[in-house]
Image (cartoon, rainbow, N blue to C red; front, side, top):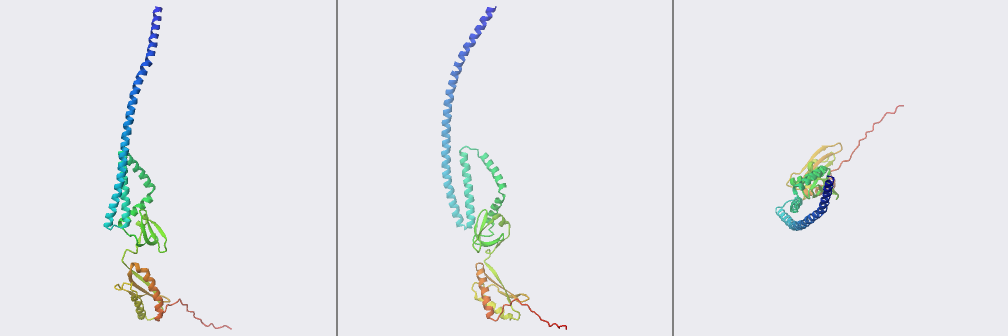
Length: 310
């Protein structure tokens, strides 16, 4: 019985040893076979991927250059159309830049889609990023919205003389975020569009004609009819004044030291200041020559004798 057990144990160890020696050979053979198939498959996949990717890249580059050429052509066509329709130059610049940006964004999305990138996720990411940037730049976006409203509603245009936000001058440029104003003393001021679009704008160039007003003091006792005649002659001598519009010379105030006259006339808007200064000079020269005096501040002093007390 013990011999049988011993023989059985030895036989078992022999079978285990034999199977142990055969197993590596079988595994190695299978691994080699599998490895050969994987390498061929991998090379095939790599080749297919390179060819597919290269094709996508080439197609994307072709679409990029063709799209960029088309965008330039469309911008030129849009510019010609707006020029024929006499669109405001500031609005032309805004529409061209806006349309160009929109077309470039569409072109980028098309190229990204051709390259196989999920455009839905990309748009969602850009939307979230845009929301965050928008919240951080609320003031800038307000100026942008104000610029759009100015370009659409046109409360003023290039070359107009305006007064807004405590500043006055000629509009030099209307941009998306600010309006550039050139003051009479040649200072350049940038006014944010958000503030100027919601504030009071005084556009001196909006109307063709403007009324000029002068205030002149004459002495008490001067002949009023004679004074009116002299002033009217001064106004009639200036050809820039619109003589088909009503002119006025009247007493505005009876001051302590003078009779204050108000003089009014209408002129083309661009001649406002030249006429104002010229008539001021003419009044200063011609009124005294015609016996009309300019009063000065006076103080009357009365001396009373005081009896001396002995």
